[in-house]
Image 1 (cartoon, helix red, strand yellow):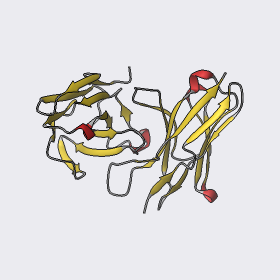
Image 2 (cartoon, chains in turn red, orange):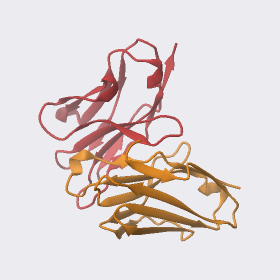
Image 3 (cartoon, one colour):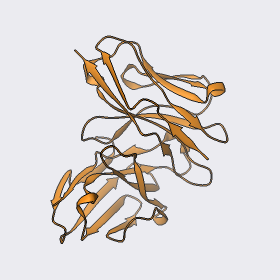
Image 4 (cartoon, chains in turn cyan, yellow):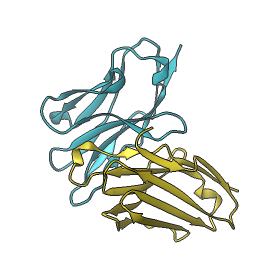
Length: 114
Length: 114
């Protein structure tokens, strides 16, 4: 079955430190992969996406993610975190076979210490 | 502003009330979705409309009634809700022939049932 796992529910980093959020997926074919960010009380905003080509993709707000087929992973990274990056981050894969649906992970909540 | 507009942003309603949530997009998308986001729970897909036809209803109670009068508008009609229905309701849209673009989400309606 297709699935997305975000192993870390909460992550806390200091401002200026590097960040890596983990995402593992299970999918029968080459997936389309996405990272979304959700600020409190807001909807989800697309950070970046991968569907083919270069396995390192750049997104908005200085984020990047690397697709590793051998590890079924699509981890999100940022070299230096800013306080405004505090939010919840969702990994998604899709669409699932025969549908229009994307599967979302359960999210990782990022806290940034000043 | 993401291109998907949800109104109202906040709604407080009694269990005997009838209200409606509205979602509007002018992105040229032809699929629209309702998601429920409760605290400490994964995103729950409620309904999917493809080309204005409901293609999915994920065992949602009948007190939630969706309506998609055209490809730009989506409603969620609410009646006799329960306190456990309090949540953030997110609308999203996408292009069926552009899976790799992902969803565009609205900012959500925060619903409180008293």
